[in-house]
Length: 137
Image (spheres, rainbow, N blue to C red):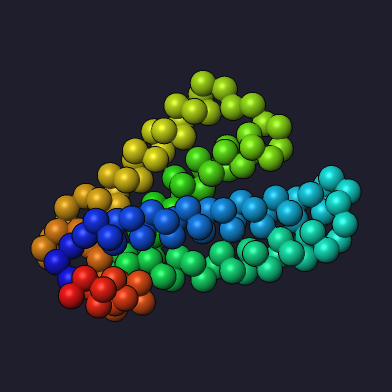
């Protein structure tokens, strides 16, 4: 594959967001069960969501495990703050917002940086890449 297409970029970003929602949401459910007195089944549901999270990065069209998880880290930071703000009453300060923005900018540079081999590193063997390639042709 010669590089990123708009469809691959959008799909990859959606997968990073889905992974973040599953990891932060699952972790939050476990936290609520163990630390905030919610029922035990909240923790069980959170555990199931965390297992689901483990499969989402495998759908990424990026072939390098380390790069996928490094880029995901920036999304995790931003989504953690958003989750805390939206569902847990957390009030981010300027440092939280600026730090999250810097992280997101940084990981987008890592993700989209032109690399040898025809541009951006996209793995044509990834399930998502195969599906999007079929749709585009």
